[in-house]
Image (cartoon, rainbow, N blue to C red; front, top):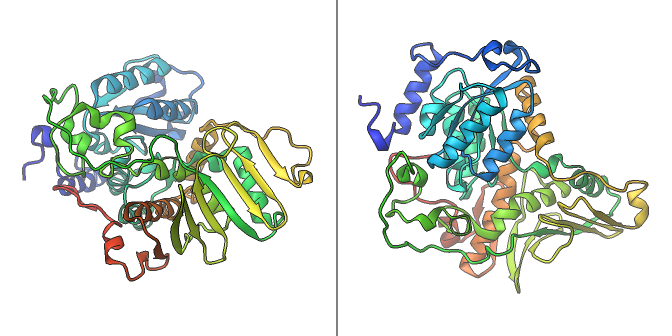
Length: 427
């Protein structure tokens, strides 16, 4: 069987076969870098380090990779991005950290995943690739830290969760606010019952991405694969001619083939905190409707999820209201509660950095314990966002069965639970 065909790369079936062979010691892989080669006196001993590859090196990818690089028990040996400037920039960042030239740069993630020396991967591609890349990584025997949102469609994140369970992999979604002090305090306050029975959980959606696109742009001259691998950037999305506008942040993140717009952009964080606060990590609202510019979901326990704009305290704020009190907080680290006695002597409970979330993932990789943002938890949170988007796209109410994971008696809505994958990609 032909295993490599230039710009098309390996098919997923061929990759899975190679990964199995590598696990059996059949396929050669690069040597593990020694502590001497690393030239870093503060690094953990080689047998205590987790060897890592990073996939997706835009600003967010470099930021989170930097958090991993700060931990002495992590050793980054490979980086991957379809865009040359990002790929080389990421490689230089790693080499500068370690004081050597040992980090290998890849255009195609399949080559990086084929390395049997790599234990963990960071996936920080565009949303379009999150689910497929996570599934491929799990099949290759890697543990995964994947940026949010974990899927573009409900069927994708369900497949991710099922795959992690099937292969026994550790997965942490990059919903890092579950590891940030002020959000942890707000969620735990609600879970403790001190706010009384919860009435409304307000989740901010991102500004500027409310309009969803499904347009096909005019063709432009496609750059050489070395500069930008258009085929791999598209990945499982439907084929379309190259146009540079597709991979500008404000366009692809509101295009239905590549993302879910304002609701999944911030909702993957804010809805996630509301889910946690409502003890709903294993479920989601059962009906959704629109009220003006807000999308409302009602949980089986009667609490309402309100997806909206206009909350305070920086980006990704949440507000949780109960019959006896409320709490509101955001990325500024500020927090306000009623009654004020609930805050006690606390003044500032923490800020935004992802470091604690990364550290928690690394610890779970070593102990094989489930992470706080594991695949099932993240799937349930992003499913709530996706059903809200279905309500938005159809412009009518939708009823949801969180057990069967289907829209009740609504074939039109159910078709939007998934998206078509182009060959050779499949879930």
